[in-house]
Length: 142
Image (cartoon, rainbow, N blue to C red; front, side, top):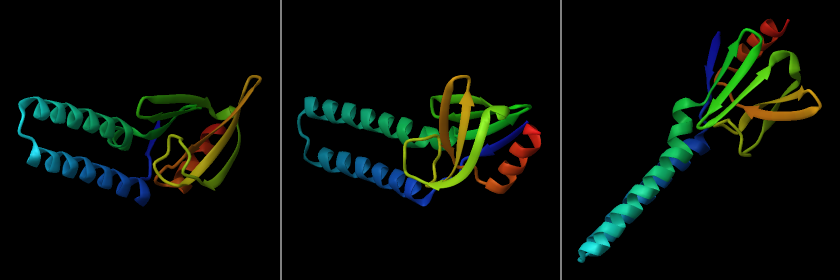
């Protein structure tokens, strides 16, 4: 078993910091003018909802996005997303720059095309050490 964490791109990291700062600054500014208890309760609820949204959209994937090669399978995990692909089903691997919604935290990605029965698919991933990841994929699939 070999596990690879996702590379975190600068854009993803900066977006997380900016969104966190905006949420904290906006709630701080709103509290400065809040005088009624009902307003404060509403602001606290909005802040908690925004922080949960931020956590599940950006921080949670940062903490658990990984690609694990186990025997003859690749297991991709990112946030609540989990996909298992048999290495023998991978037909093509190539580099691709993309900001698309995939289990990758960097724009520099490896795109895996695979065939699972009659179904064709593809997924973009961004392991920290792409060269080692490719060696492991090739070694395990042979």
